[in-house]
Image (cartoon, rainbow, N blue to C red; front, side, top):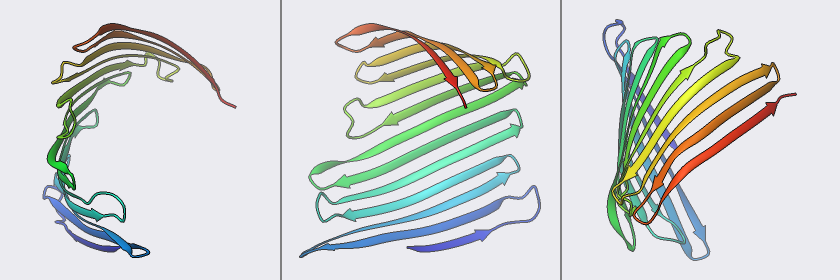
Length: 224
């Protein structure tokens, strides 16, 4: 493996800093009269645009010619950003796009994107939200959208008792859909024992069927 690192930065707090890393890796295999190889290269760029705002960019390429199996190539781009305007708020946006080719199969472009936000309005209460989009070129379900939301409340400073309410929903372009509401209670009975009670309530739906989701979970853990 060859590893090359380049970095540049400015000293003033309000000015941006930039770091870049270039990584190459590869291997060559032989088995009798047969041979194969795998090579990949990645350029990673990290930038602190401002004190509470960072950007990351990855550019990658990989080629694989195995001794057995199909030849594959992949070109990818990943862009992410994180914003933390204050210690109680954090927002992350991430995107990954990749173009893949494989001998004997059609080429395709895959997309994956996610938005996440976390907010702590008060010490005992936290809010979380996530929206993810996924579109795989060779996936028959097409575009999938997943949403997750959660509220967590710990009324006591020691965290011995917590309440969580989560909602999730996943939908694709083929008419498949999952909805679930999950309340959860966690009680740390003693220093070495934990009781968790949760209930999943929702529906699972497709073109062929529609069913209700009702699952009760009781979990007791004891640590020694």
